[in-house]
Length: 298
Image (cartoon, rainbow, N blue to C red; front, side, top):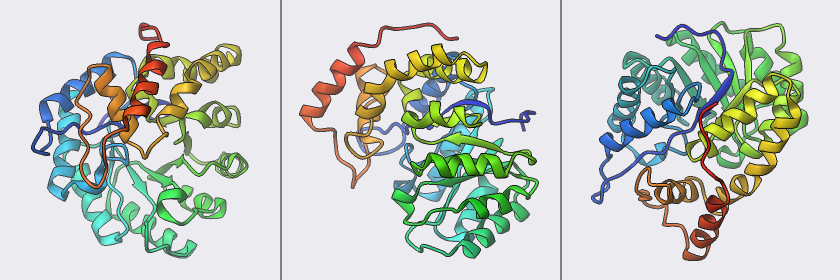
């Protein structure tokens, strides 16, 4: 396990490339991991929502995490959540066994557990798997918000060390930062357009879709803010604003997969039931990308 004490910085939520037959393209996956590492990101997150974790088998899930771990030296945060506590525990242990430095655990979806059920779910995994873990709140996909009181209680666990905020409620994020200041606990933006506001109230970084396409600019934005240079951070935020919006014109990861193909990083194939980006949106996305001149790593 890599020795690091914080989840500060930029962590691309990686895409998973597929061959024509729908199988995983591990060669391209490793090459993309190395590209992102060379661009200066602080770590990588395979097998989150952007990685189409919902459409891969458990064995594929673990193989993707292992391939990324083997390809890079930066920390790897493996997505290992599920709506089934027993299944999430198994995936988490397998991810840790293949070398994941930390785990990203989406809250149970569809089941819509009560807050005590969320406590029990995360505690069971924390008790069984001895690696740092990040609680992932994305109510638009799960149907259930993780309340600040719940996060504060979970933050008391030694290996629950972070929270990914993708709920769109800055007041809630601010309260979570406030209530976890005495713990070794990091709050990360899960929505690119909210990264700068979250950093301003005490967040430490982001798990980012846009960083797949613009890792240098996202790193520049985050570290400028972390170092107190909010003028530069705002400049990057507004420069990237059109991309932030474009990447959610359709369901993630449809647009970012198209952007990755336009940039030459991987094909834009997605697994069903996802579909290709519409021709109209692809043309508009190409225009957004054309406005972003290449830049070097920070």
